[in-house]
Image (cartoon, rainbow, N blue to C red; front, side, top):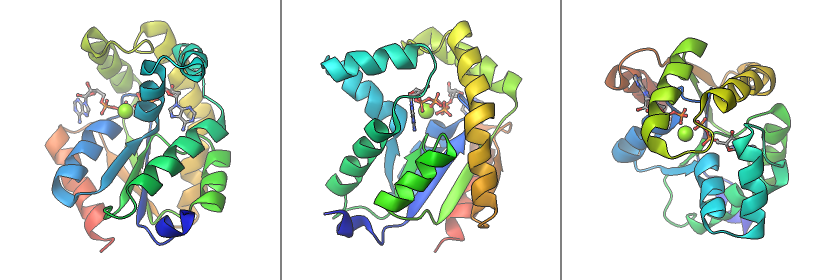
Length: 194
Ligand SMILES: Nc1ncnc2c1ncn2[C@@H]1O[C@H](COP(=O)(O)OP(=O)(O)O)[C@@H](O)[C@H]1O
Ligand SMILES: Nc1ncnc2c1ncn2[C@H]1C[C@H](O)[C@@H](COP(=O)(O)OP(=O)(O)O)O1
Ligand SMILES: [Mg+2]
């Protein structure tokens, strides 16, 4: 089954919490028809199902920690396979969050063609998340959890960017700009892929 996605175009979308990954992915879907898979959304769907596994995940996410690697990777892989026949490419949003996740993804699925590094300042991310928290209903959009997510991002996820920079596939996107201006930079990076 995994053979079906071996030659798929894969784009990792990496950036801090609230940097604008989901916002840019939506715009990429609208213009390029890629399949958007957000690890956070997949996990929140499992939580919403009310399953025992969902309850365990909820507890971890509420603390701003990372859920076990195998859980996320299996969810992403299943979702990729489900779309294999129709997908023009995959946006993997919120994964890898640590170098090990990248290595395991490549062993089990394949190599990314591009890594979009959605970059915003810490204070910008906190401001956006506090605002998003007014309406998102997300258990992790509160001051205490946001701080932990940000710390973990700098500690565990930033090394992912350095790891892929060595391969020359990282495009750094200035996400301090207004959404459409950010997207203009994103478009250039995606167009280079073709
Ligand atoms: N370029 C931007 N300028 C201003 N606000 C933005 C920008 N990009 C995203 N936002 C807002 O910031 C919040 C976090 O964006 P989101 O796409 O959910 O980030 P992530 O998926 O990286 O956590 C959302 O409320 C979104 O509307
Ligand atoms: N690749 C991954 N590995 C482990 N945990 C993950 C994960 N992706 C998401 N999670 C868990 C921990 C995160 O704090 C939480 C929310 O993730 P998210 O929706 O990607 O956040 P955001 O879009 O604000 O960056 O879900
Ligand atoms: Mg998101």
